[in-house]
Image: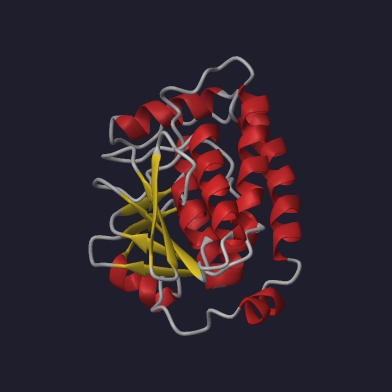
Length: 237
């Protein structure tokens, strides 16, 4: 593959394409990173030698979520819109994908992990939808993808509490699983028919909610309290 990327490594082994996120230790994402991953997936889709691809990461975390610390506040809503348009490209990828979750997949990082068809994890894996702990609405299509994967009630628990699920529990819940030989594009297309359209509709709703919750005092307090590892002192404004 001739394309060069700033924040990901792209390679192949046999018929498997490999995309490695290279922003260690926590691999926080932004528009640029999601764009690069989507570009790599689309390039693999055009490569007749590639039958499936793996998304993995360097460092301690698979992806610890969005890079709030370095995101500019001006035009944040527009930035979020562009991000989710890029994320939709991932859902429209044509070939089966496997997420190798070697550490925490948090917030939008959970959305990135759930985007893949299958997930392989380990005891050190951690999965959390921590948005409400930040005073923030869930994103990355998780309101659509997570209930389909683990059921509405367990998704509710993860969304409402921000609870972290370890690797063993993730397998028991269906958040992570073993790769099986179902790498047939026609079968995948049938099983996921309409999936990308539903995910795109969810991101539009999520963006609307994130736009106003991002401007609240609760969101500022949520980010601050989470960084300080304490409970948030939310005021409802």
